[in-house]
Amino acid sequence: MSALLVELEKQACSLLPEERAHLAEVLLESLHDSPLAEIETEWEREIEKRTAAFDRGELQTYPAEDVFSEARRMTK
Image 1: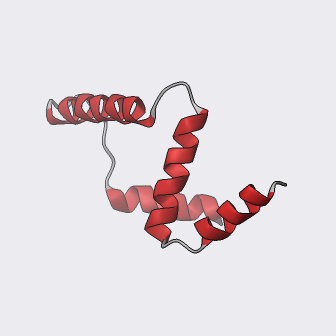
Image 2: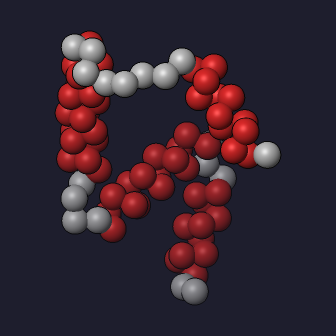
Image 3: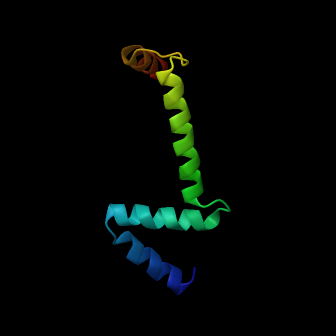
């Protein structure tokens, strides 16, 4: 491991949690062809599409207590 990498890791670990999260996001984005901003835009479109479908009554919904009950049952 290079001395630069060791120093960067040391400095990164001394950052505040939200600063480390931002740094991680920037580094991960640099590894992908599609920038994170494009992915976020697509998620926003999907959220709008699903919200509109919900508002039109086109989605099957379940009461939260049923969902949580089923989740608890599955983890036992």
